[in-house]
Each structure stands twice: as structure tokens, then as C-alpha cells.
Image 1 (tube, rainbow, N blue to C red):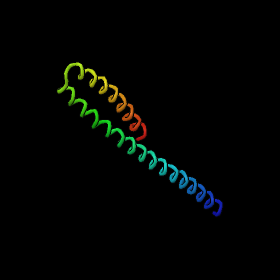
Image 2 (image 1 turned 90 degrees about the vertical axis):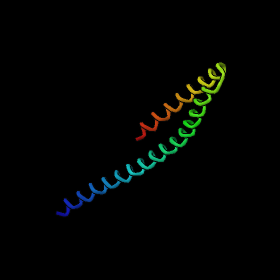
Image 3 (image 1 turned 90 degrees about the horizontal axis):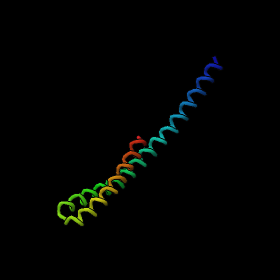
Image 4 (image 1 turned 135 degrees about the vertical axis):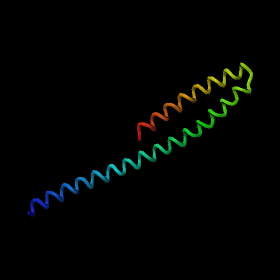
Length: 87
């Protein structure tokens, strides 16, 4: 009976260790995702402002704004995909 109890305790200890490690990893992944989200939100607000400028700008300026908007959108898309992979 003692051997069975020792084996069970060892298995529970291994599970506890694995659980604790995963809990830390999940917390860190969550924090990293939140940090990335905050950075992306600043970019999102910038894109929204640039999009409004297109309607108010001349054709030359609108073209430049559209190019900038495209680059920022690509960066945001990549960031969103990184966050999605963390979750």
C-alpha cells in the first residue's frame, strides 16, 4: 500500500509541477498579448485618423495618406495575427 501511495504522490507532484509551469506560461502569454494589443490600439487610432484625412485631402496628399495607411494596416494585421497565435 505504501508503494502505491508513493507512486500516487509522485504522479500528483508531477502534475502539480506541470500545472504550475503552464499557469505561468499562460499568464506571461496573456501579458504579452495585452502589451501587443495596447501597441496595436495606438496604431489603430492612427489609422482611423489617417483614413479621415483621405476624405479631406487633395488627390496628391490623399495618395500619400493611402500609402501610409496601407503600411500601417499591414503592420496591424501582423500584430493581430501574433496575438491570435498567443491565445
